[in-house]
Every structure is written in structure tokens, then in C-alpha cells.
Length: 113
Length: 112
Image 1 (cartoon, rainbow over the protein chains, first blue to last red):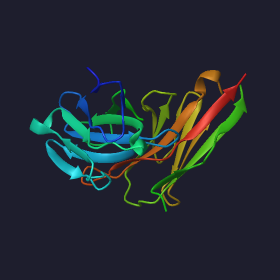
Image 2: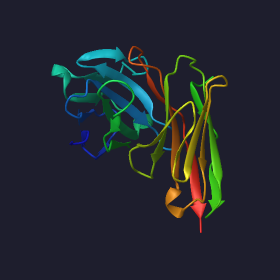
Image 3: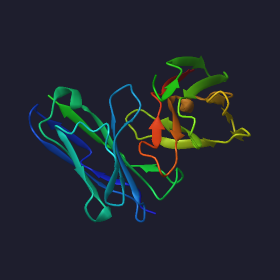
């Protein structure tokens, strides 16, 4: 079974620029999550999709972050404009249903300078 | 109060030592519990699930106390390769948003 694919692996941008991350979950996984992990902290959920619908985006800074999951498969997370405090690893995870089979991608490390 | 809290760490222990990590959670509706391991610059990976009766996997033992909303992980005979951050994870069920919540993690360094 192929894992959760994310790209790019690394991104360096200047503040106020925009950036987009892509995630392709494991085939058949209905639930997709985007997490932000700042160095030294646990992953913080940004948005949770069930198929192509948003289940929870309460912690997504909507003035600058947006995410979509068209067709209920892959997903894109965008930041526009980026701030220095957005420097973090952005992790995508997916699961079929329930808590088991929950798998992370390798993440995108974003540095905002 | 944070939803999932863990021992702040870091824990620095010699090889062969026994070390225990604690985790508390605030959502009494939580249904499933896990320990994840995260190596430096890597994604978190499932270490083990935590069952009410307690469960063991080799040198690792996990315990759950639902009444106290408390989870623990015990590592016996620590190896250098156990050095990592250990994340406590609580799952509230399919019908909830924010249903897979991570604690802040406890960093373990096993020293030669």
C-alpha cells in the first residue's frame, strides 16, 4: 500500500509571499488532516476533511490559510501571505475510518525568512 | 487547560534504565488512545495502541486509566535507539471534529 504523499519536502520563502503544499492520501482513506508542527511542539490540527467536506477548520487561520480537497482525494493547503511564525513542518495524514490505519506523510518543512 | 498534556521532559537516561511517561486528557468522550514516536526531522509513527486492560509490546508497556483520564508508557531496558519524542494521542470518534489530538510530546535521550 503506497503511503501518504506530500510535496514539496522543503520550501523557503520570504514573508508576505504565498506558498502551497500538496497531499495525496492513501487510496480509499476518507479522512484527511493537515497539521502544523512548530519545532519542539506536538502537531496541531489545522483542518480535517471527510471526503471533500470540511469536518473541522476551527484552528485554521482563515485570514491567510486556505485548504481544499476537490473530488475527495488529494488536497492543497495554501498560505497567503506568509508570516515568520508560519515556519513549521506541515504534515498531512489520512485514515479510512476510525483511529486505526492513521498514517502521516513525511511533511513539508517551511521556512519563512 | 490543554486537551492533552504530557510530562514536559526532556528525559535523559542511561542505557538499560527504565523510564515512564505520563499523559492526561480532558475529553471524557475520548474513545481510543495511542503512543506515537517521532524521530528528529521525521513524521510521527504509531508505536502502540493503549487498551483499558493495559498492553505490552516487548520492552514497552502502556496503561490506561479512564477514571483518572490518564495514560502511561513504560520503557524497560532503554536502548540508544529509543531516543525520540513520544507523543500521546487521543481519539474522540468519527463523529467529532478535532478527533485526533496530539499532546506536546516528551523527548527522551538515552545516553551511552
